[in-house]
Image (cartoon, rainbow over all chains, first blue to last red; front, side, top):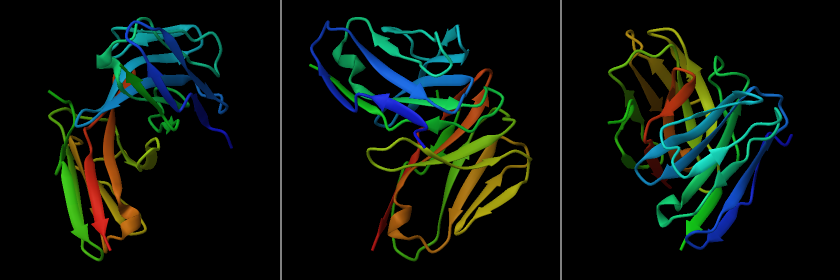
Length: 113
Length: 109
């Protein structure tokens, strides 16, 4: 059972570089989301998608882009990395936004130097 | 200001002790979820509570949803080192979900 797969697990970027964090789920879930987790802040929503072709901003969207061309994939793009984006990023999916139980990937630990 | 507050922020106890952690909000939620997160891993769902006053048990873990559906508690009986982790509560907010900051529990052998 793959569930939610995130790649890479670790990444170091230089300020100004761009990169894409990959997220794929094999459960045919409609709802997918990206969170960042910082010490003492809990999980903060970056972007989410209620279905293929539909995305929307969460609490902290600045500096990030997403797209949802298929049900399975929901990549997160960092346009021009900044040290403030150093964090652990989690992708999650659930059957729909009406079904609150979420499945999470293992996370990507990103360091921007 | 966080929509969901959790207390305590940190808790360190000895194996065999009982403990309760809390999740509070000024908003009403249609349901609340509890997750446990271990180091280097993503959160894993423990339970969903839906009805005000509802109590759910998962082995040594007891979850309660407040009557007004604004708060929830997690009680662990006879804690074990395997219970160590970050406990997060979450609730629906429009088309997405919000998380509390978590309670970091350490159970010492």
